[in-house]
Image 1: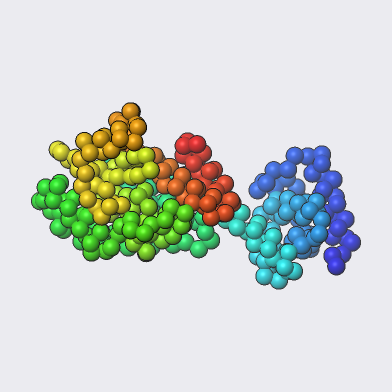
Image 2 (image 1 turned 90 degrees about the horizontal axis):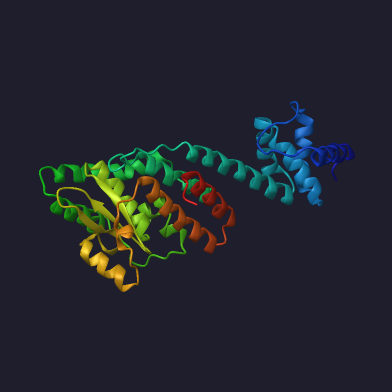
Length: 312
């Protein structure tokens, strides 16, 4: 049973919240005593939602001390306390990833530098699930493949480079769209596709784009309806379809396909996308899959990320 003094503390907090608008993540009161912070953490297990909300609001304004109390409560409290403390810690963690996402800076010409795109995809992975690799780990895996290809590309024509890129990523590594399910996060999350080698079009295209740029090519994404391609730039640009084994396709074929589906403004679907737009396509695919999987918190955080990109 929670002590009466703790209940009085929260009751005072409730009274304050009725007269002052609450602002999460921003302290509005003097530093709290350790005993009060611990009491608030314990009250996360209270049966009254009003008490829980007041305790939550108090803890959010106590900074590092509140986080430490939440970590203890997530391991030592009753079942309800542990569950709510873990949910709060996860919410704070996602908030941190969103703050990092908001600091992404894309080059005006992003056809060569892949770092912001990789970072954005990694930040999104952390918004979707608790445990995800960092950018360095993913970069290391993809960089190794790029180094192999960089040596092979030396002095070769763009068409030959496109073929070698596809042969290496599809035939040697097994990357492709076979059996990919749009409602399976393992087939959409960049780090999971790198490991599993099976993915949806936008994620496979991001892998091709990252590896090709690190290998020295100029590459952009092309967002078609329900599909995604990459364009290798040169005197005569080459379109590559990572989902279908990295095959090369012509612009004429794509336009014919789009018109057969009833799209009249085909040029809009064939243009080069900025990295910001590529990342937005990836976030939308993740958001849709998270929603289908019932992960509504992830869906909301990805929606916030899209807003930060100016893509909502």
